[in-house]
Length: 465
Image 1 (tube, rainbow, N blue to C red):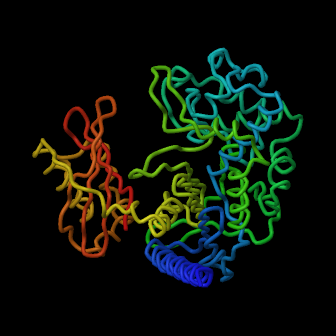
Image 2 (cartoon, rainbow, N blue to C red):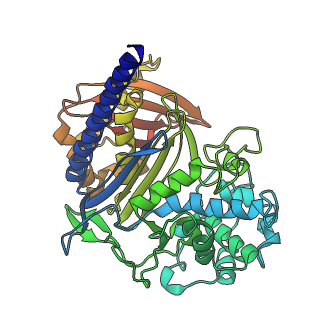
């Protein structure tokens, strides 16, 4: 009788769990369809991995608007800077073989580096703490030019370091291209050939490859932008992103990547520990970045993840390690933040305590600043920024027709019922406030920066639900 009772209870529990997961999956469908409609995203593919099991993997919308080709789990998307964690993994494979030392100067591995880079190490490149200027903001690095390693270093060398290596973290695509060149010099193989042989093929990631348009990639999605109220094709004048963001993949392949990160067959535990440890700055403070991964705490949940952005595409992989939930999202719209928006929204379905609605109000001692921020949020939603409350640069940005048009959708949520302070921090001379605004249809979490002159210098909508 006890055995029968136990089996019956176990069956009942299994049914409850199955029903719960099914209900969560349906909520994912509803969320993605709504976001694709609201944000004019042509297509997306998402996956949820919980306790090592793929609980959800599905594609939505279209891979090609022109040909009305539906997106599938085998549709190939550009993953942008999500590529960086793969480049970092390539470096760690060479570290395991004794061919690369993380704390060795890069001049040992690369030819003709300028004297200004003398103190830059491999670890500095991996953690965006090298001070080397990001080439993606410079001219002359177009993919069509096929710049060689020697040419890349020569073109970048004249620019002075932006800070002393190890002093701070400023995102630099240059570091990851240089890491790709280190992989080449130390493995004796072209970067992508090494990645295919050592990572993608062994892991069964058969659709993961180089995004270069010269290659014919079956089932490749078309990338789009949303401009002036309609979809348009992406800019064809692409930057050569190499180790910084040149990889394409499918949602199916990305679940294989996530699975490899869980096991010990691909990388040693010591290598993954290095990758997922925050860099320590020269002054002893911690950076938010490890080796190819961002590391943060989101409302009490440890998050190891990264987003990716290229012309026409957005991606994200978020690993909530303590909850053992990973979410991956791929899209073919280039508007910034779409991959992260989808991934964070899905995560809240499986981890309810991530919801911004659960954030508690805290007291603000400066009533004038509180009024200034609340007014500015309302003005931003209305498309009527106040020059008096903002820095000149932010006022120009918020007044631009492009920004006003892009944010006009916020009006559809209805008037803000209330805005409350839910977090604050100070970085150097800038105070950062987080405000939660409630509207009839949506909750909005804002990141607002106030400078030493008591002017709002930045305002970003971080999350909405």
